[in-house]
Length: 380
Image (cartoon, rainbow, N blue to C red):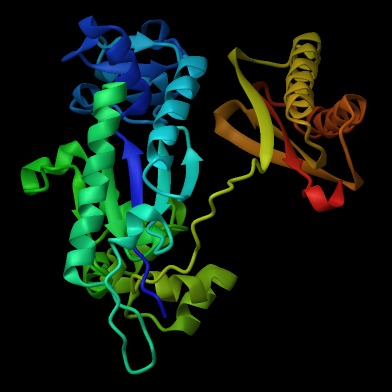
């Protein structure tokens, strides 16, 4: 087998960092990007915040009202997605100048696989034949991969005046976790250069002390159940057999058995296709006003249909999200027999799903959302 080297590059506090670049007067001040806090009465959440704001306990996905209470003197800004998208495109073009195998996974992060056939990685590969023809990467190879990551960081800083962190590992999972370890808040632990390297032979030991919530597929609810049985770290999970993990995680159990040992077989996909298009809105006050709800819902469906039409995409599954008072959230889906690109079809089927919500649950509504899953091109 050929040992992989994968770099995970992630911009630091991307939205907030871009805002600081555009408005230098915000530097060294706590900056929060998200919904309007309205003096602590606002609804919605924090999209991101800079490290100054994080010192006060603010973090992404936190209710904006809580963020305001923690740091009322912060600079609160609405997201400027048009600007962030332009900057993201520039950054991804810089990354693609260094490697062919690039998978963009969001506006501010990407995976880069060191490909022995590419110009940049030819010098990074130092093959040594094993007993079965295996190709292994020498210490020098990993050092050159780290140098490549530093070069990307330097060019992004020079051209875009923005900082990023990189993790380097034998697979996507380890590279991503290594990237988190390279972030600025952890620099006091000796990782001050923005890059953390975890070689294949180090991956399993690297994973063991991690909290279980660092593992892909383990959220707060699952973690709470595991902690009741004193499973707090990845090392604790390694004590479980593959069968035990299948009981806990179902079909994902076998994959989890490998992951807790630092193994992840997911490939880097250079062509990252859009899988769905969705829109949602949070009301200023929970409401049962039928006119407001229907008008808002139709507008959301129209926006989704327009975005699909703009990209020339068809859909097959429609999902409606409805969040009631008390953050009680439900979804309803409709899968069509054949893919469609019709705005009328999307609107009609989405409205049917939404009306079921109105009749089944009488609670005031806090949030509405519409999402269309893209149909595979082979089915269009």
